[in-house]
Image (cartoon, rainbow, N blue to C red; front, side, top):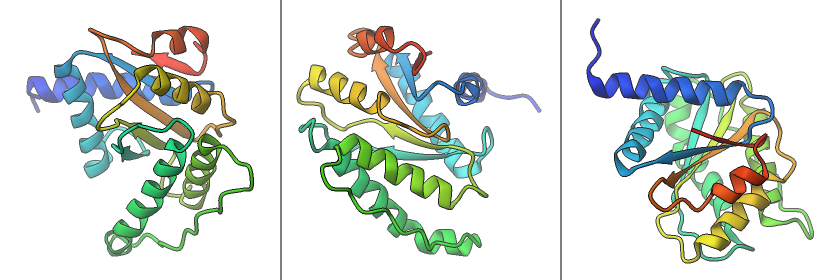
Length: 191
């Protein structure tokens, strides 16, 4: 079967993603991309979630605006829980048991740690269905790009289990995650 150019580009992105997923140290996949490629990354995530064609992984989209570096992880944790609750009937129709209970936030726990623990808990609960849980970080609005980069550093330096990953698009015309990638080359993989 001949594939069209869009399918071929998605296949290439899937190859890059799978290399990242196989890297035991990688925790954040940084797509350094122009707007067209960013749309292709979005299409890859959609195809993967709809068909599971490229990897046995579950991608969770997080598009909540970034405004507070001390609360953003809690916002994403709440989003994960809400998305799970909203998809329970669809999952049940597919024969997937939907009895995951999110762990409570611990006293004095950082927002990044609370998000990571929640992601790990959900992934572990559904380990027989998914290899990796991947948080797709695409805030609809970022008030302060430096604070965003600092928050991502807090995230990637947290203790993240191997089966939890994150990915984000960094605009190649005005990249904001370059210093993060240079500071943590083993944990931040740039494609």
